[in-house]
Amino acid sequence: MTCQQIVRAAIRAIPDFPKPGILFRDITPVMEDPAAFAAAVAGLEELLEGIEWNAMGAIESRGFVFGAPIALRAGRPLVLLRKQGKLPGRTLAAAYALEYGEAVLEMHLDSLEPGDRVVLIDDLLATGGTAAAAAALVKQAGAEVAAFVFLVELDDLQGRGKLAALGPVFSLVNY
Image 1: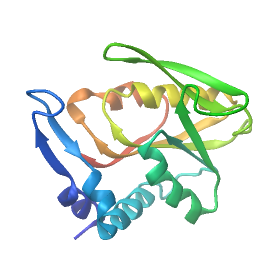
Image 2 (image 1 turned 135 degrees about the horizontal axis):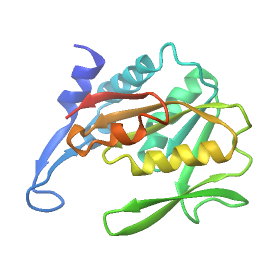
Image 3 (image 1 turned 90 degrees about the vertical axis):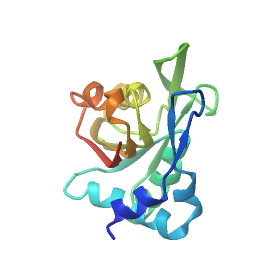
């Protein structure tokens, strides 16, 4: 089986969660099964082949889970992009829309250098709002987005279209 097939087989579909009519794709089993987790990391690494990058920007919170082993094995820094108020010290901030309201993503001011090429990683691409805010943080730092990488992409929500002008978009599993 390929990495993609192993990961897809581990993802659980939960109907009517968090509300009726929604089919929730639960990636928890991917992280609970060492073989599936290893396949997820390896599959995400394969998506990055040929991409020049020197920093991994991991989006809270499951982006940390998948970004850390990739950055470690590549010998590159892991930059944490967190919800507002979670980082000490001076930060850059970018707001993004939620279904009901707005949220803010932050990054330490000194995490990136101008000219850095950053891979932005998260577990899920839905509408693209969070990833677009992450790209705005990278740009504020004078760096550039080398690629967006996601474990799962929900095609019907069209997040890829929102990100396409900001950098190449790669997903291991699409629904």
